[in-house]
Length: 180
Image (cartoon, rainbow, N blue to C red; front, side, top):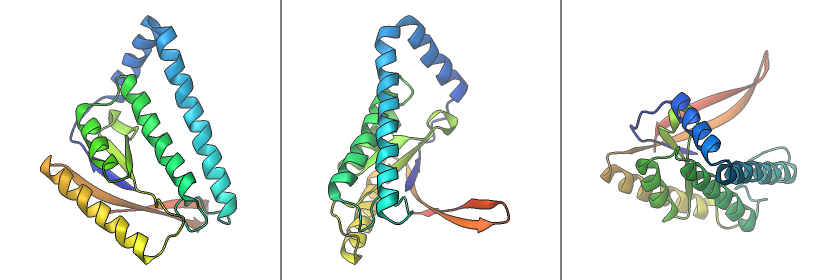
């Protein structure tokens, strides 16, 4: 998972109000978008659940047990979700540009929920069923290419690494953020 900060400050509260106003004024148009987003979530959950079972309780979708077709479907659902957010007017031009840059490299991006979309989450998933050193090298090259393009727009890419540890309270998440 990669993260791009857009430097666009927005208020989640204001965006929620905006969507509520859109819904109240254009219910027959907005309702299907919200229903589509729910269906996207259902499909993503199904992919992650199936992948978790196939990968011995790991939800990593680009592991060697995942198929290229599943990876493509997952990325497509990420793109559809971002398109729905755009249709609800909660995205912005920086995010649109980031999504375009990333998609040219066979990856997808979508806004994050915190702060009204001040950041974009970038997902790069293997397009083959294997996860070997060659695909890892290709992934690093893609990250470098995206980073170069984003720097032209004065945006910076950060690589997020999440892992789980077991502590006294059960499972906890650890997070590492470093420049890509």
